[in-house]
Length: 433
Image 1 (tube, rainbow, N blue to C red):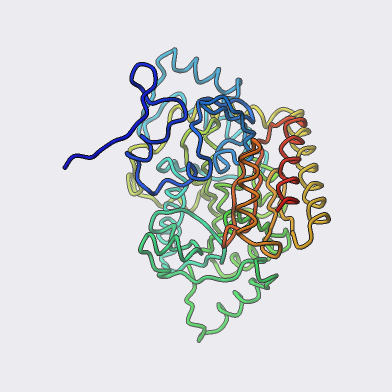
Image 2: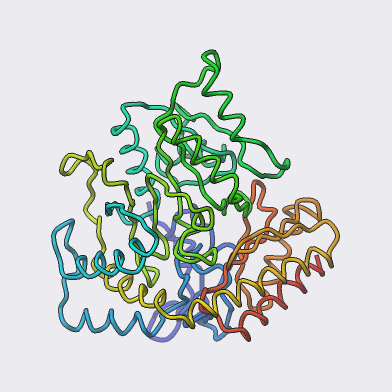
């Protein structure tokens, strides 16, 4: 069978600038973001994406949280190019390498010890979902129990174990995964309002006829992103930690999107003072948008046999180099000061929009803000806001159960001028409705 391909030819027989036909002909229909932002991007720097046709876009999406330090930060790029020029190891499975040693040393120095965390590091496959898979597998192995508790609105990945603890029926249906061995409990907050989920869990665990056995672990996002930007309160997280401690249940904190400074502190759970048993990290832990994923695990939980959770790309050497360079940001007072200033401005902006546009609710923490239009036009209005932003040079994403929340994720290192320019577009878009 002959497949006809219609591609507009440019110089040298290559596709013409801006032409989408080759993507649409050859790529599977599962592609998503290119449908929302239908331009061909050519380069990127800082908070800006540049299309092949010359248009510039401010990026308030940041690779779904994988680019917290912006596009092509010079400090990180210089380390990467020097490493490549020196023929540094590019692929090393889980072998000992200089790049991995330097990453671990800096991680311990900058992240773990200052926060009183005595966790070991497990490198998993390069995507966040594999870190979740490993954490769930280890929790079951360490406790000898199968059951898990997850929260409504939670999103933990698209592979089978991760889907089982993900609240979205649509996502689970696509993967053919039932919520087997998983008890879902309402999160502290959601579209239907506040809920005392800790008291509800207490009742389930205390009642011998509840139908719920003692689980191996509870998995929680300290700030739900895809579910609609719902931050857990300090009090709620402390109560959850106290409950899991008392019942001998492991607590897994999924910090894949909320971690690496997105909420103003490195971890979203930090303000609560709790210490999770397992922590999953990915996205911006790679320092440059490079794939890297890991689990931080309490030392006494390390009951793995060698090779029991394996994968060809567990430990991306270039990501080790980039991430090691990115640790330097966390030792710079000016980085912390600018981050706090930008976070405060984002909070003020949320209050301004909520006061100015009837029905809009603003939620967030640090450098993430969700503008909930569920009671102000719903997903249709949110889609119009996203389209308006794109047409006016700004990339934003949607979140929530029905994509009714406009989610803003500016780079942590964005300057004030860029931040204000993007926020002005968002305000105009929401007001225009």
